[in-house]
Amino acid sequence: MENSATAKLETLKEKEEKIFLQTVKRLLKNKLAVTGLVIIILQVIFAILAPLLVSYSPNQQNLSETNLGIGSSHHFLGTDNYGRDIWTRVVYGARISLIVGLSAVSLGLVGGLILGLLGGYYRRIDGIVMRIVDLLFAFPGILLAMLIIAILGTSLVNVVIAISVWSIPGCARIVRGSVLSIKKQEYIMAMKSLGASDIRILFKHILPNCTAPIIVFATMRMATAILSTSALSFLGLGAQPPTPEWGAMIAAGQDFMWDAPHMAIVPGIAIMLTVFAFNVVGDGLRDALDPNMEMNM
Amino acid sequence: MKNLLEVENLKVNFRTKKERLRAVRGISFSLKKGETLCIVGESGCGKSITSLSIIGLLPSNGEIAEGSIKLDGNELLGKTENELEIMRGNEISMIFQEPMTALNPTFTIGFQLREPLMIHKKMSKKEATKKSIELLEKVGIPNPVEKLRQFPHELSGGMRQRVMIAMALACEPSLLLADEPTTALDVTIQAQILELMDELKRQMGMGVVFVTHDMGVVAEIADRVMVMYAGEVVEIGDVDRIFNHPQHPYTKGLLGAVPNVDDEEHHLNIIPGSMPNLDDEISGCRFHPRCPYAMDICRKKNPTTFQVTSSHQSKCWLQEVTDVDRLHTTS
Image 1 (spheres, rainbow over the protein chains, first blue to last red):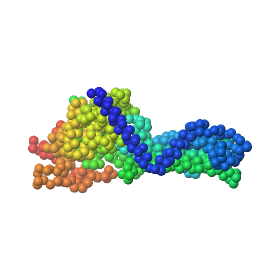
Image 2 (cartoon, helix red, strand yellow):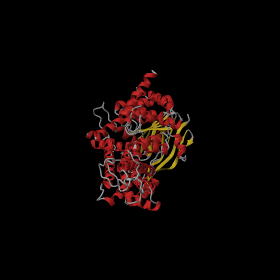
Image 3 (spheres, each protein chain N blue to C red):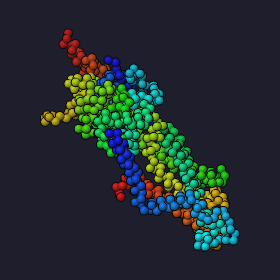
Image 4 (cartoon, each protein chain N blue to C red):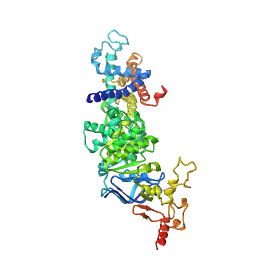
């Protein structure tokens, strides 16, 4: 009797996993999203295994082999004006982009979640929270980031802070919207009638209901974060030379556009592919997580 | 026997930008252990608001202006939110109208059923799961182990309402509030759920406040009936008194509006007009514009509550007339 019960529990556990698999399946039906996913996975692998994939160190100069073009015998993506291997630098650059993007988005999510949850749930502080968010929204994003960096000084850590602050208002609005609609549901009332406290309701019952929009937002935000990191570095506000950051590499390459265009083009393509990949995966996730889409497929 | 629930002169207001709306205008009633009180009335008469006031879950713009609500002699009004949270689900529970929306679609039945047990009884997840299986068996759900792993959308309406009942009764409350728990169910399921509630009530010796507008349900489940109109109690009494000797014209109207399939000649007697808005001030009795027996005094003075028998009260001037008649006949 006991055994059959536990066996049943296990088969049902599988069933639960099936729901997750359904989402994944729907995502995998979307060819564009799969392309993006492959690019992201490759990039993550490159970032993790960077030292194993290259034969140089990213800052190793070789003044006898400067400005080699694409397809040179030892440097298949060429070298820059100091003779540094561009493939090596792009691979290490993936590390920086992913780490900066990930930490900026996570920090922004934490801030946005707290503001959004509190604002959506407690009417009394909603006004204050949303005015702060409006204030943040009033600045063009990149300008806000530049302002923060101007105050804090130029460094990659400050870029993370700047971009995360910039991510807060968008996230807060999305979360607040979800909370506003969920808290009016009868099941929240039912939970209250069972004696659940506000905190319990907010984190245990409302938050899991807003995960879908948050996941989509975070993925799309990764693209923006990576792009802005590069933009800020290009402007000289983020990573400083000789850090192998993509934006900084483009900035260094722009002086040699005629002699060695690959110096700027290669990291440029890297940025483009990454941003493209995160955007299409975000799009795909939005479709896959929306149960209404099932009917259209 | 001692009263389980005593509500006295309860007044509930709603704040709007312009004014204060009086949703419940000073109602009093009591409930004994093991008794089912049905609150009947049209939509908007304040019956749901009354039950929400008892459990302390009025919407944020509602406030209890006056009165007292005592559970087992304990005053509930003026308790802090923390004290109320301990009471809710533990001593007072509530079942809602829509079993479709009263369960969280993102969680399994098991997750939701464990909540009250983990909140109040401080059970571990394992203990709570065990107890949940017992509870599901108690409310007559087949394959409880399997059901724990299922999501609300995988269950039928009747099954979901059983799960809601199991959740509400998990901590064996002494008072159960049911806000139209069978309205959204089809008739055969309705009968099953009513039977289940009646049986559980008897097993646990709870008091039940059952809000409904369905007279058929009232006849089936009530021990006593309280009829509400526009925020006031117009008549309260034992179920057979209300059905066989209704005193208030509104109660008579409600009973006349119940369709009768057996009698082909029978046609529905509707109550003309509609219920006044919350902000309509009506002089005298609030029912007089719709009342076929309205007298002069009804337009001028709000009737007091008359005792028809020791347990039967009616808030209507007609009562005074019959009292006077009775005096004449006896003298």
